[in-house]
Length: 256
Ligand code: IPE
Ligand code: IPE
Ligand code: MG
Image (cartoon, rainbow, N blue to C red; front, side, top):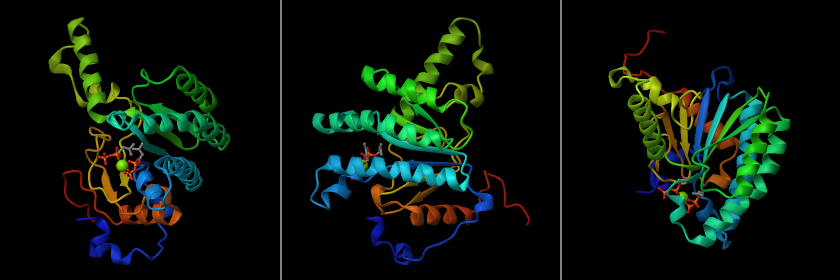
């Protein structure tokens, strides 16, 4: 059943104000629904990807303004290569166009950007833009943005397993000494705290290979709103919903 058919979403019109003194430290977003946004307007899917890229800049700026510490966005998955070649090329073209522009704009606002995922198959031009992104981000202390590009949760766990196996093989690590922290340290997101809130717009109720390891205790928020339409009101609604949840991490609720 599509989310929009659920009674819960009958109340969606109401705008809400979250408690800005206890924001989630790390918000992650599966930026989904660009294609449907475009198709519903009789536009080519690429127009939806463009609108989605613009929305990324708006939401990153907003997260920075309200004081969120980390934002991780899913921009292109390891499975998205299976799309028609023309669409993949159009998306890569948008990365080329937007990466530098978005980076220049966002880094001026003290935001730092990091590209997360396997960048090896990307074009030399995109790779050099990624290096420029790192350079422009240096020293910025505002919101930390991770853009997941050619990212897959399974792929990063496989890479972590390979790296740890090499350490064992070279006698630098004993298998029995491997802990969750070792795996954390070898993921594409090493050094970033786990997400508190994972938002998936577009009405799909799945993770699509996003942050499989890191999401162990994340709170999920699903909405039928398509990513290009996911605005300030929608973000505040997601945060307020998150703030109403009881996170027990396997324990029992703390007495107030
Ligand atoms: C998300 O939007 C962008 C990428 C996966 C690159 P989609 O392109 O998946 O949009 P829908 O899901 O087809 O509407
Ligand atoms: C997930 O969306 C990937 C991104 C948003 C980048 P997809 O559109 O690729 O996911 P599925 O195919 O609906 O699971
Ligand atoms: Mg999709």
